[in-house]
Length: 132
Image (cartoon, rainbow, N blue to C red; front, side):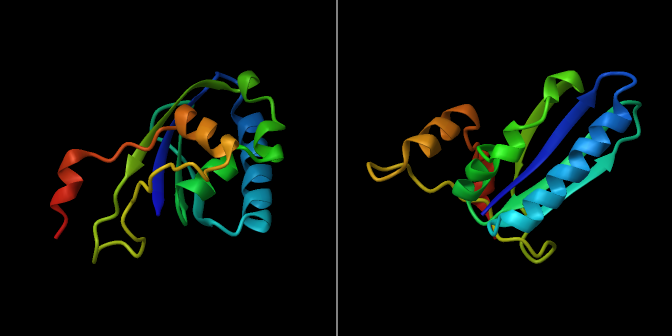
């Protein structure tokens, strides 16, 4: 499974446009992708800051989401100031999501998934290996 928290800063005055795009993205993602477990947006305390909690069946489902036509079909450059993806590992017994895993890329991995793995490399923190 793959879980991420996106830290998103929006250009001033673009909040309504960003929220419209996100409503469309969430609707299409939840109706068209079977590998998504959670896809939720939140407003932050600081002006123009948002967060998105994403959880996918595996990293391949996340990469497929990133490569989806509706994900590429919006003008994010018009609204985004910055975005940072942070991979998360659910605390077992305190979160219903399974642990974040990084299955290997092999010779059978489709080229679009290999390219996505370069663009959005999964990062497992070393201390996560101390899972109970």
